[in-house]
Image 1 (spheres, rainbow, N blue to C red):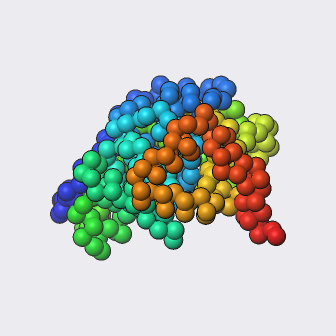
Image 2 (cartoon, rainbow, N blue to C red; image 1 turned 90 degrees about the vertical axis):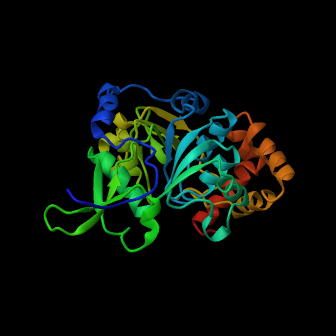
Length: 326
């Protein structure tokens, strides 16, 4: 097969599906209770040096509580999928938890502005980077979910951005036309926040799902946080609700409001004031250190963080905003 071009970016993970299968074959696929405390799930499944990927889309349905626990446990030298990363990226950059990153969208919090601390960290030289498009990252998860080493696409061929990726441009054996390759991405751990899950790990997502369907099937381990745990009969009575099946999942953590201050569709709106506070306080290193100590490191758990930022009264206010109630 003719190769016309090779990107200069480093490939941080091995795309060989047979290597990944060796892990998947050993994974327990029986119906066992996977409910865990968040600290136990992060301690067991997120190890220093491993590659993690985060579910959700931008500031929507991000697993904030899981990110906080990664900081509290001082995880370091992680690889990171910066697919549609906003506040989750901001949190992990604050802890300097990762040293290599596949970049599609990072640093910015969309219309809210840019995280100055995350930008400073990425400009420090401490993080290796390889660039992709958002679609390219989605194709990489899909290739892994399909159990193949790569998918082909054209969307990266229109600019020189492909130069900084790890794609190759090859000749199609059927048409002789040029296509870019998107190598399979098998994360060591995927962290995904969902609306509902049962104790076995069956999970449902309402609203935008982005690439989480494929991510859960691509990752070697999956840690689910959920707004609530429901009885398995809810899924048996309506199997189409299952976005992520139990056999993909390793841990289920019930964390109501676990996406805060992000937006959880049909549950609560984003806390724009708190996100603005993050962006503002980052500009002063001493104030930012005190802010992190107050909101993450001194908190025993995520509920304590919620209480410090308005508790149930704030969540009720955000729930009204989500449903446009006065």
